[in-house]
Image (cartoon, rainbow, N blue to C red):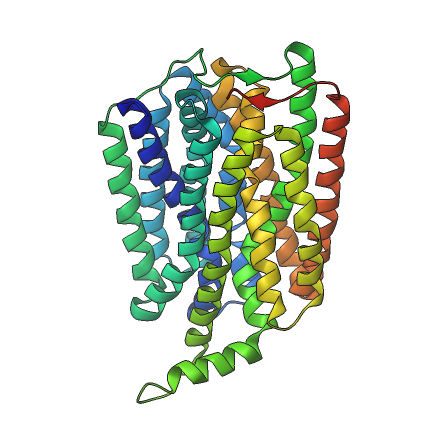
Length: 411
């Protein structure tokens, strides 16, 4: 890599880590916030709806600014705004203030994907590998979020933990702003075989349809996962907590300690997503992107069925393997977007993608709150099964529409 490529990969990976870390802090703190503010779980979950909505719908405006000016500046501004949101959230003691603070976090986090992925897709020759490494750090943020939130909430309370996260965001944003690195607006370093013109537009529209359903599934699944595991495996977690406490002078059977165990297990599940990202990066550079995309989701499907049916230790294993493939496909998906869109509007293209994935995905937060509150979180998983089926169908349509063509990175 050149010096410029290394800077792009380092800072986009750091920002990707923090973006996913920050956006998944809240799910791990639902139970402590609920207990501390004397609110029901479904009410606390509902406060995150504007955060996840803004996380998606603001991706297009951020993408426009990134294409119009400088992606690095947009990425930095988002990190700083997120830090401010965490400061406000750490001091919030009412539903209204918490909702507004979380909204700032969503607005700031929405800047990363259109700007950071534009830097990566245009500025590095080994695009699949770079997206895989970058995705590895994004998944590291996903994995670290429940554990870090659980530990810091247990040690210092959720409010002080959020303020600490805000400091980290602002420092990283300032560093990326003052460090020079850039990409050409109208050129990709990585080339390859793809479709062009109107055919590319059609494929992008079909791809967007698939990403809409995966976004609905992904956001809902990540929001409920810590709470879902804690409710489904509460008996197992209680035994695990008793075992862990047996080596201490006094047993800790508090609800906060069980939340910490659930957060730790969730982090372990997300670690497999890191492996999936590296695997997805290799697949993206070596195989037809369309078929790699289909295979990853097809393999993930049976594991989601097991998650819906299981209430034993196998639930943890199935969740880990489901996460490996559904997060591991991201370098393939992001490479597909790059291959069917022009460099000049790359940030806007990713903005459209993440408006669908995260904006529409925010509807899953409302769905989880309503359906989960009325019928239980287990019933929500079957809705995710339906979303995954529709995504697989749309990927099949995309392959059929582009039959006779190849979509491959240059080797």
